[in-house]
Structure formats: C-alpha cells, structure tokens
Length: 441
Image (cartoon, one colour):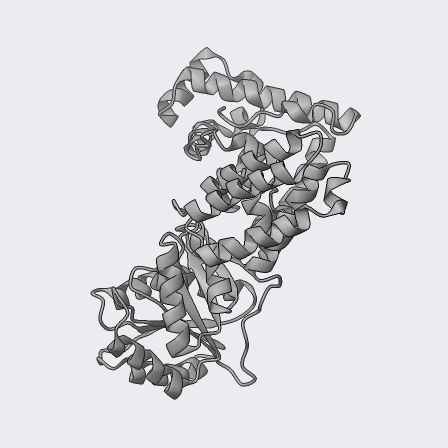
C-alpha cells in the first residue's frame, strides 16, 4: 500500500537520522525531498505546499534542534501532520432509528462499486447486521448478474427487478428488506465513464426519493488527482457523507488517499485493500499515517488476528507447545489460520520496523500452497511423527504433492529448526526468536 511513497519518505528520514545535529539548512533540504516525493505521488499541489510549510515551521523550532534525537522528532512531526491531513478521527456509518439503514454507493464506472457492495455487506454482517444488496445499475452489461454472483457467494440476499427504472428498484427494495428482516440496504447505483448531467440527476432523484442515511463516494485509489477532481464534482452535486478508497493494494501512488479528504472536506470511511471480498478495512487516519511512514500497524494486525484465529485452537496449541508435542498437523492448522488474515506481504508490512526490511523481498504466498500439498500428501501417522519419513516415503509424498524430494527435505529441516526454537523458548522465553524460519524460504 503506497509503497513508492513510503520508500521515498524513508530515505529522507534515514538521512535526517544520520545527522549528528540538525540545522535549518538540512531541514530545508529534507523538506524539498518530501515535497518532491508527495508531488510524484500525485498529491494536490496546494495540499503539498501547506503540508510542507507546516512541517518545516514546527521542525525549525528550538524543541527539535535541541532534541537528543532530532531526526525522530521530525518523523513525529510529519506523522502528526499526516494524521491531520487524513482526518484525525475515524467517522462511523450513520444508522437508522427505524431499520433498514440505507447506504448508497456512488462513483464512476470501474471504481469497484459492485464488488464494494459485497465487501460492505460482509463487513456489516460480521458486526451483527443483516444486509441486503440492491442491484440499481441497469446500464452496465451484466452488472445485475455480477452483484447476484457476489451476493450468492456471501449468502447475502440481492434485490433486483427486470424494470429499467433505478428509482423504482431502490424504493421497492426498502419494503423487500423489511419483509425479509434485513436491517441494512446497500444500493449499488450506476456509474459512467465520465461525469454527465443525466447521471447526476438520476443520483439526485434517488437521494430525494429514498433518503439514504449514508451516501458513500467510491474513488479508485489508482487514479490520483482524477479521483480527487471527480469527488469534488460529486460532492458539489450530491453532498455525500463519506469516501471509500478502492484498489489501494495495486500500483497506487497515494495522491487520492492524501488529497481527497482535504479537497472535499469529507472523511474517508473505508479502504479496499485487495480483491477478496473480506479485503476491506475501516479507515483510521493515525494507522494510515503510520503505514505510509513505514512504522507498521500493530493494532490492525491484532484486529485481523482476532477475526481470523480460532481461540480454542490456539489454546490447544499452547498446551501442546508447553508439552513440546508440536507436530505437522498443528503446523498445518496454523497455516490455515494465517492464510485467513490476508497476503503475507501485507501482514509483514504491519509489523513495526519490518516493513523496510522486507520491501525488496518477494514474499510468495504460493509457497504456502506447496507446504499444504506436501502435508496433505502425508498419512496421519507421518504428520504426527515426521521422524518415520524415510527416503521412499519422501519420494511418494513428492509425487503426490507435485513437488520435489528437496522441497520435502527443506520443509522438514525448517520444521525441525522451529521445534528447537520452541523448545529453547520454553526454557528461556524469547531466546532464539530471531532464528524462526519463514516457510519454504
């Protein structure tokens, strides 16, 4: 997420930390590099100008120049200003006093509204809500079918009609939601390839008739200033309540994420960070600022773990670890829980201090698939007691898993190292932690 910007800023801070003493001259030089990094990330020019001016003004104060760690003080100042730029606080979705709560999605075609409707439905269902998706995009070919496929995969009801009247579809969906005891309606409205008056009038009519409790503008995070300009136009005509940034896992430069709130005055409420339907997060300005500066995001990592990891299985594993009875079945079970948390490179990037170290390392999630195939090709006896894996058994497992005997040997060696490390940690906690191997290298 915003990797290029993060790397550019990290190089600036690295130079600052290398100075024994900061002066107005080297602070000024660093601010020029920060300005260049933000402009190349396609952040709005006026926002960059104001941001850099605010950072420089605070950085040349006596508190920074006399600080024992002046470089870290500037990082702290940049972090603080980024949080202000991104919105300072998290804004929740408004809910209706009398169900259903109506959430209307608006934006250009291709911004990811239909997929986002499913992601929001899954997000709110995890919060105990009962959502219904509404197929109000009657113009884009197969848009209704796409939403129905998304809804079916999530087991979330989808309301649609054969009529070519989105206003009628949205109005009738309210009664349908109440009859099916759904307390949240998510309207997937039509987008266009560009802003036109007909499109805006249709959205204004839906807003007037249906009276949604929340209107979310869906912005493609990969489009930089184009997304910001589009959001500004939508805001003037539709007066939406919040913003959702999509495709932040792609080759995005970050301009939209850093500019859109300041330009529109509306808060970013969600970010979409992957193609899977559970790849959505509530937007926290402080956490985003930490990620941009390469400082990790432990809170989000813990929240993902709490959602994905089975506490009962974890408790059983802890007992096994204490008895030093950890086998390949337990190892396989842990891999399944890690996979639920998301791509490995995202998880590593959330660990403070580790993001910079792994930025040039190719983290391949397919290696987990190889490990799963190897373990699945073993018998129950072999998984529980890997010591019986002789040459013929390893050849059989390699043929069954589509891997090589060398892959089997590498996995078993790493598993052996892990058991040794866990044994030493059991005697003296945390000793040997830095030797923990990553699966399959």
